[in-house]
Image (cartoon, rainbow, N blue to C red):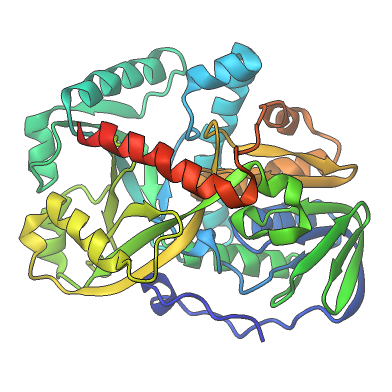
Length: 422
């Protein structure tokens, strides 16, 4: 039987359908999608709507990985700076990436509305500065968004206004984005999967892709013969595509949710209901939930020992932001893998002829992963111009191979953590 979802606030607050059967024997389809997160479900849905027959394979349950465990923030743009993209693919290519990533937020809204997905969508996002350097960078970022990209939904929030909105003395200013939002990520992913099924996609859970080749995906108990293969396994793809695994590193992110605080107390913490993240390299992010909890994520770890208490470490960071919650009980604590690329740009492309992939969302996956699925569907249908711009972004392997790269990254992240502290 497929594995159950991790115990989390998300799994406890949504109806999870009965497990779908694993693949047995041979299936034939135009497209085989590997991975049942947001990217895989979006690709399957968009392909089915274009008339393709689609089989989707998920190793565990739909939404089992990062798509069902994240902070749920719906963000514009990509994780790397636009200046990085300018250098890597030129100003014209960088502009296309920006436009696609901005469209990703609109697509998320449209999918939720079209398919009537109940996922607690809430408008508003704030990026908060902790120090003077952050404040300077924030002002420059807002100016660039408004002038270079005509992105008019952002504005600067000075300290006095921020303190009236956010009940924390930790931050000195912020950027508010009226186009940003947050949602229940597991409910959203399950809703995409159900929409894909209604469109004719055949979903199989508890089915691990062991070997991928053009026109064929082999599993433990069968195989799928398909004209096209789409890989959306990200950090959980495993041995099916080792060349892709070298381009990302999975880090473990930790999230907690408090007990129900009540509407008045929760609203007092974040008056405008927006999702919030800070500007540190190892950042904190938090938001209110629909049932008036505070959901908070922050620390990441790289192969910590069994004695590492992720829930306690995350609570400690929460209390730096909201010390008034010292008596609030932590009701849920969970972890999940986040996939990072070296340059923090998304990694899309073709692994083999007819084999497409999308990974490396670097914390922007709620909106961008759904858009990746749409781009892959466009490419398979012969409209690959936008997908190919992303495929041009160069990505290097992480140094040290699959064994040594985690310690090396831990040392690099220690440097950035010290930089945050200083």
